[in-house]
Length: 299
Image 1 (cartoon, one colour):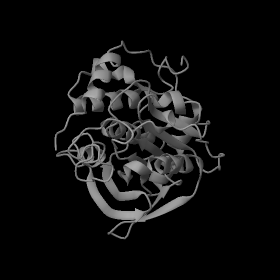
Image 2 (cartoon, helix red, strand yellow; image 1 turned 90 degrees about the horizontal axis):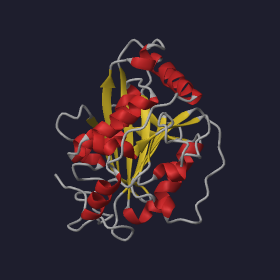
Image 3 (cartoon, rainbow, N blue to C red; image 1 turned 45 degrees about the vertical axis):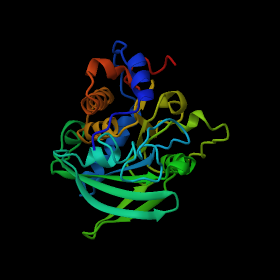
Image 4 (cartoon, one colour; image 1 turned 180 degrees about the horizontal axis):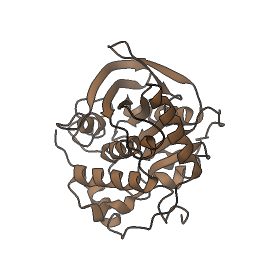
């Protein structure tokens, strides 16, 4: 269903998303290593796997809206899951290019639905230059967390980002994906719970392969930008208030799968957000950041 963000999002976004764009900087060395990893897997016929943790919007934490938008248990109406900008609504929109490969309810404590989306991609950009010649699959494994389990959601995001523990996800066609800590990209979408938690502690880095990370939440860069080491590459974060929908996340995933630079990923995410929210690109691009942004080190 087509639902606009509640007034609190609209007012804040109008106030802070109208600044001028920033200059792009150089990509960090970790991005090359990440593309090396993805290219190696693609050449071997293995898919690109993105693990995303989505905390359903919950009126107990912030104003999400009525009629189920802020019901953190409602998979059919929740703002961050079921609406046109929510994870299921955005990936499932007509002409999205994504196919629902699997759906499971209540697989793990706190996770009330897991959706797996698949997309076939022609190699281009950094991946084509690394010898990827055949089309490859991109899978997004989306865990929808109960709103009141948001602390568990960000703990799971941190554990997957820093750890290397794979989570096997079996698909109906017999394919088994290595998600969780084995994913190429680990992401979070939802309320910025780091604003509220004084007791949060990042886990010690557990080694494992290089990974990218995406965090779509208000001012996520203020809390997460210093966390990724060279082996944890920030592909997309935010530096303003915004609606934590899945359009910018999906735009960043598509750009990454296309072998784009960090600047290209940032622009693609902003364009997807602008398209999804019916806003101008010039108005919203300022809210999205990564190391290609001249403002990245100015916070």
